Length: 280
Image 1 (cartoon, rainbow, N blue to C red):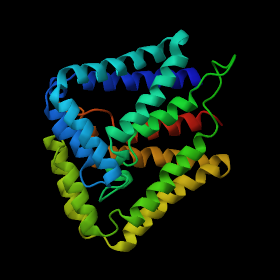
Image 2 (cartoon, rainbow, N blue to C red; image 1 turned 60 degrees about the vertical axis):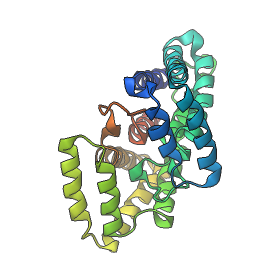
Image 3 (tube, one colour; image 1 turned 90 degrees about the vertical axis):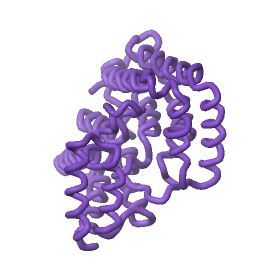
């Protein structure tokens, strides 16, 4: 994957987000009251207060605000697909992604009651900004690989997830089962049945098993600095685990629910892993 390839991939993600933002549900006040407000629920006041303020503004005039949001994301996506506008589009991508991360995702739930990689923390929008920076063009470098510092972003994601889970995330079977059950409520029927079945199994997991899984996440993050063979194994393992999080956690991000806003964190982590693999 070259920098140009990463720009195109990011552009497709923004176009997907724009398509989701153009859904009829988003043009109603429910977008503000049930999507935006939910991002601030249970969070620290410096996160919840500005989100509530924005939600009230959007709820008063949902159609023009949502049309502006969707059109901006559409413009960013199209701008990334066109080489002549890629710098402006990447700049807009970073600025808008950080704004969405704070006011739309509530910092990815970092200050919430149950932050973990399984629940989508630290948020897809933050990783959009990271990808935008990694895809920044350099002179004569259309075929240049993405920025080498992506390995630090990968390590920060996984090691940070370990810290969050030890600090405030689910560390015993019943807590993990409750998390999966809560996430399954918005998933498609066939997937929610699988998730509820997994939740019943997770209730009986010992703390030792969960600790081992947390250790696996730490290895995935730190092995990216190991020799190439071990790095590749860790990256592939991270891709597999992320796909599992995407299915078991947010249920494919509820893309067909009518009120999904983005593909969630896990697919973006997969893209980061592929970008690092290509930069051997």
